[in-house]
Amino acid sequence: MKLNQLVVGISSFIVLAPSSVVTLHITPVLAQSSSICACITSEAQPQLGQINRSSGNFSTQGCATSLRWSGPDGVNFNVMRDVSGGTDPVELTNVTNGSLLQNPNQRSLYIANPTGAQTAFQVCANNPSTPAPSTVAP
Image (cartoon, rainbow, N blue to C red; front, side, top):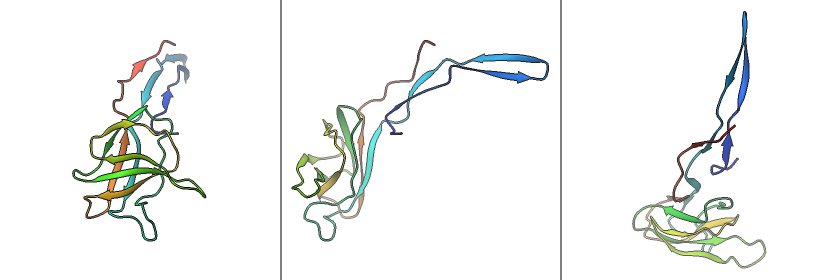
């Protein structure tokens, strides 16, 4: 299950006690488990034998329509899409910490051509806001 999928609780169940039967009713709650869409570790430069790629693949499918990107201050990077047997297109350019950008809504994305990094770093694509849990009528 992805972090951004909703989970619905159980509506009721029965507890059997030695001398009586008790029915407990629970109001189902929709809960979003996290505002994180995806996180990946990137090298500070393209990986050995690669021209652009500095991370493994990640997906933003099923996340919010816009994503707020987080990473180290002063580091810029591109997000590219891995195309098997083809040319990898650039999906996002000049991404920095705090950038709010349209979600490419793709599988097989990777971090590419980072600048400003001296060591490996973590990048996260975050859903810009997570609504507070709300109850649903049974």
